Length: 337
Image 1 (cartoon, rainbow, N blue to C red):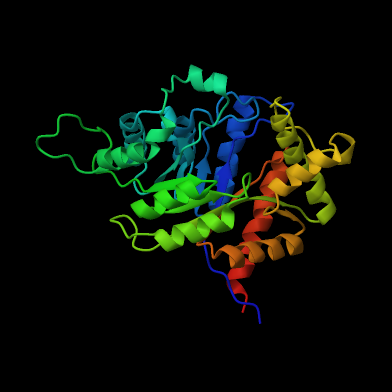
Image 2 (tube, helix red, strand yellow; image 1 turned 90 degrees about the vertical axis):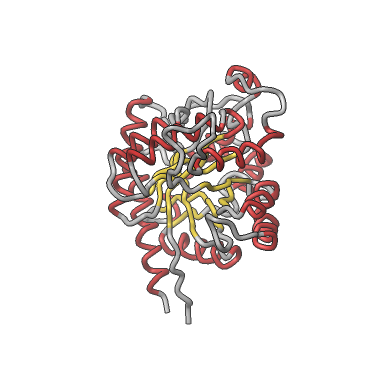
């Protein structure tokens, strides 16, 4: 007998810019996908901060969050994540306080420690030396700005203070897991691009978790790549766009999201392909049957409280279809008995 799995499924969108399109079209596709995800019953829709990457249109993450939230009605919208060392905590509190005032009860704030870019862009962002080392202190400061102000408080986050903006910590190592546990925050792991420390991070988070005003018990979300199609062959072909994008990034030449190819081995060495495919070892790629089996295996292995799916698919219609399949599989997992 197969046990049912009743957990939320969500979407991570990098606002990909496919070859042959524009940033304007990519952002229009983001809103279209968000509306589609809402109609399919996905729980939240997150956007990610990356800089100096031609194939990603969500660098101004708070702006895109506002665009998506205004164009939808009930799905939660947030960041997966805001790279906090790039910003002053007060300014993030004001920005997300504004979003929460415009869209009450729908805004999430996921926080990351990585720069989300290269060294030259880090300097252009005016990051100061040691900003990464202050991440824990910056998270605590950000929590402070969202609390109701005291009478003698000289500096206030307006908007921001007293707003209901749940904080999440994001990570790809045990550092984020330890900090999320210590602060009693929900934790999301980026297994879609950095799977190596997944199981260790899950254990560290749950073992060290201390209840907080925001969260009574651990809440763990895993983000994986998903590329679902009607057949395994078609899904593997669609997935070659993601493989090519990662290859370009590792070769130091990031670009627009390329169209799929029939034979990925013609453009990648065996060593390169092995490395890229290892990165995607938790990804669910294939037909509904294949994806369902992978989803169940990942959920059972991690005990995840929520699954977030990232899908870098060149063709927008195929991307919509992938999430349709995923929504059906989610419902099937809930009905299994």
